Image (tube, rainbow, N blue to C red; front, top):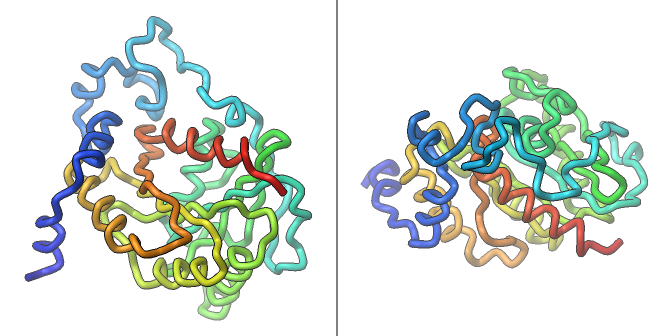
Length: 263
């Protein structure tokens, strides 16, 4: 049986299917989003409140994400890491998986974290302060990138050192492209986080590029494959930075980390 046939044979759990439908995840027609009450004239239309009488975007529901996102440090070597004064949440994943776009969508401050169509744009570990209570960390992508092999290896070594030794790191959001699923480099990082007991959570990105049933299948596939991992935080989170689907749920998850984290 081919991998595609195996994937199509996955039966998602009722809870995952329900989440996908409730959050309008997956490729959707504009009319479907409008009928659900969302203002499709907004950028990331699903990241607002349906059936609101206000034509403008509603305020972000989690207070911490209303703070100004402020870039304050970049590190290409571990000696340049800033002092870990506030809890950190890092965003890791393959090149072009959408880390920078997700950080912008979470805060609705598009442009603060630079994005690019060219894989490998982020060439250092970049630290962004959100208010004075949380630090969001954009890690260099691994895998395909427009860079020399020795440079890519240095990026990956820096990421590995950060996720396995960083004091103050409360969670790594490991981003996986919904269409393509997990790759060997993803598993390498997961193995490292397991060994170092670093808490991590899978975030499926670009959910708007596949059908809703395939979003559910991918989430189910990953949950089952990582079921034995003790450092994994459930559930798999599913988002689209383009449509805003699932963004509110991810904010809720991350806000809880900031609220209860202790250094």
